[in-house]
Image 1 (cartoon, rainbow, N blue to C red):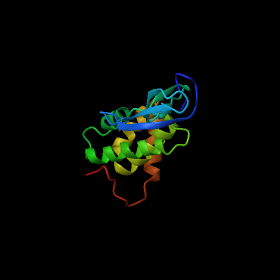
Image 2 (cartoon, rainbow, N blue to C red; image 1 turned 180 degrees about the vertical axis):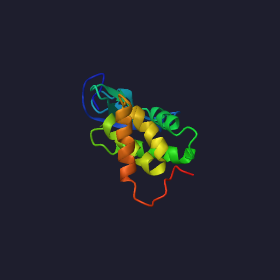
Image 3 (cartoon, rainbow, N blue to C red; image 1 turned 30 degrees about the vertical axis):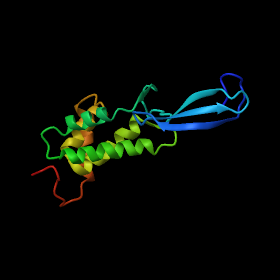
Length: 161
């Protein structure tokens, strides 16, 4: 650490303590050359996780935004809050596993849609209608047809019933 008084780069730590909030370590140091003391603080450098929007803008990831979108899609559906919380946890893990500390909204949206498809098809369609921004009924119908085609014959619909 560079001494703020003489610029010498060698010092010794005289005292270390955790801050009251436990978010930093306070260190008292003494310069090896001029013997003056100074204080430094060690904190975690928190770089936020980012979401890259369709138009290229970057926004800080907001867990609450994801949960809000899921709650809206799953309104009046038989999906527990704990399942939604687990889905948000999985989304957050997907983001934090990125070496670049960012993911596109497309990647996040696809992850959520794939999970919703296996949880509840109605919630999936609701989420997809907002996420994919269907321009007309034809696009919405195509999505429904793909969903129905993908279902295995004889398999009971998880959202029915």
